[in-house]
Image: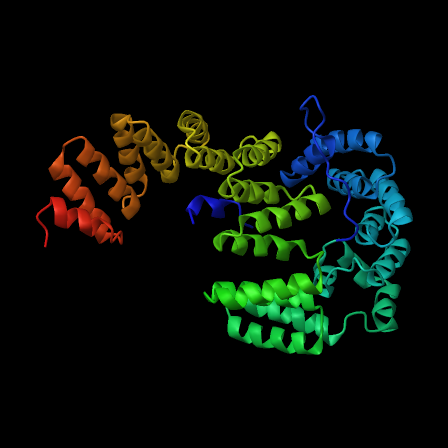
Length: 406
């Protein structure tokens, strides 16, 4: 499994896939969501308003429009958008509606929205509410304590789950795992619990247990898209490329603004022999994130793996224009030059890569092979020696055969 694939790798009724228009212009919904990722809320508003013209009354568009207005300080407009969302999908916008009511200096209405939120399926964690800068202003009101005294909004399961996540983040993974196992036995939020268990097992290097837990998480709730994406990574590692593509396609259908899923599916499609599909995914992603040098590099690696060397060189050139301090980009371009027989250029790129990452054994190994092709035996032996020293044990064969090492 090549390293490049791991660049790609971080619900309810599935909405239709937001496809780009026939004239290849950016889809306004995806363009708006991409701008939100980059905190470009003014531009996001422009695109999302266009998307709303195409799909009037769409709750998802209205919700993200409201968030953009909120971040821009347009609180009356945010309020109107969230009210419309609540009419169409009760509870979805209640958290942000409560925050907006506070901004509008209406604490009684904020408490009412917060209560609606606590009763909804969209409820965030108790910690997130208590630490929210806007909602904390309600703590001085008479209704705040009455709301929390009304009933126990968060049971022990939710608190234990949050404690387990805290322990995991702190590095106490075995304690976290014990708490998650107890929650699993109690039947609390099986999909979320098993997903977190899978992450812990993965971090401990127990791939078998991680695979078992992630499959169980999806079986408990097929809408757990984080779990589907994690399973797709394991499916790629196991060579089940078609299954990975199928799962990632479902993720994209359900949430077309999961932009990392396009990169992940592009890698899986490439490994499944579908170059056109892989480049389609990469180009779609780059339409909305054109300055992502890692995505341009990933595109180049896909082109390289399919023998499209000239196209790959163009991609690596572009990645290096964006970020000239990344050794992997010089190394990739050097390998591509070597594949075309342009060994001098290849050697220059290997040297640049080693300037940036001098302890990378794989680069030393490839540079040694280039020196060997150029008939520079002494340089080749030096490179193979370094490669072996930095953990590339394959270099020993070259040392024994060509450098008089025994």
